Image (cartoon, rainbow, N blue to C red; front, top):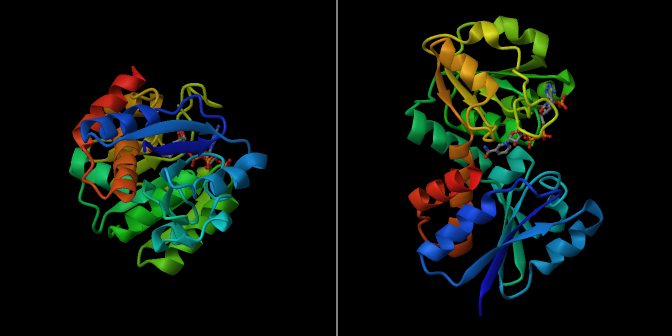
Length: 279
Ligand code: NAP
């Protein structure tokens, strides 16, 4: 029997997960098909129920369902519970487990691609949505000493900062975009907004971090389409180091693949397939 996995989101036109996940199944000769399950909110409960079938290994979950799926599952793993979002569902004989691999995907990309040692570093996160929550917890778990979270809607940043402070040792504070000025001397800047994303609400946008872009700072953008976002182009010009979002995407997917299959994911194959799908 051919097994199935899929991505649940709405709309789903932009997803490159099917390309690199299928490449991994094919490489390891696992008889499985990765499908695209566009699911409007009113169909989410039925979609999740369908994952209990014998031939389903699990699913990826993306916007706008990462939080809404949580009460529909049988167990939430602690990492997903802290972050407050599920991006991976694992079907164990009809019992559905919710996991979050975004935090690990991001910190793996930092370590693997940028060779960035997180311990005792100071970081600035712009954004407070689902991705920012995963990045904030990931950085705090990896030992950043200080975390500043700023967002267009300041209340969301403050709420995330409070959640991270309560659960980890990182000194964390939240605020509005106007508070970025007080972040001079940070080692790491992460754009977790959709500014700069092709087809997004502000494709030419750059978060207002211009004054912090300098030599010695690592600037990460979770946006992976385009690979060189306006923020990364400017950071590069100013002499900062830069890291795009493709690594996080591949490593979160690799961790999900391992949950579904208990096999070591062929990360290099997945990475090249993701790059190819983006072109
Ligand atoms: P989300 O939950 O919808 O959050 C969007 C965030 O962007 C919010 O903080 C929002 O601020 C902010 N924002 C949107 N438009 C803005 C604008 N014009 N000016 C300033 N702030 C703006 O989305 P998400 O899931 O966190 O995803 C955020 C980005 O990360 C997306 O571009 C997504 O593609 C990317 N991402 C990448 C990966 C990866 O693996 N590389 C994984 C997940 C997400 P408000 O709170 O004020 O609305």
